[in-house]
Image 1 (cartoon, rainbow, N blue to C red):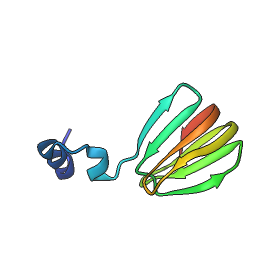
Image 2: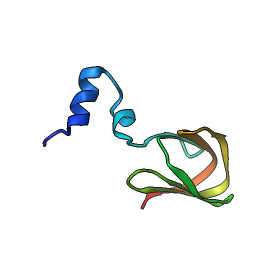
Image 3: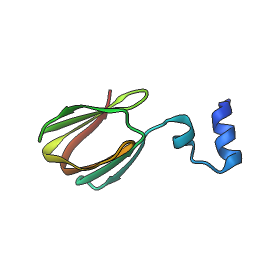
Image 4: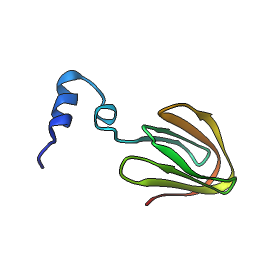
Length: 88
């Protein structure tokens, strides 16, 4: 598989390719916390469903008691009880 120039640059410069290529990075802790880096916008927000727009797709988190427990310009953390996480 051919690598993109930005992937080669990230490897050579020791930069995480997620940052250089604007790829979202998700870190999930069980079914209670998800940390998303490199998101673009929040398109839906309720205690049962949160949708996060990234460069190429939308991350949909469904569950109960969902809250944005941390939010910054390029990263956020969602807490609650997750039932399903999907990519649209």
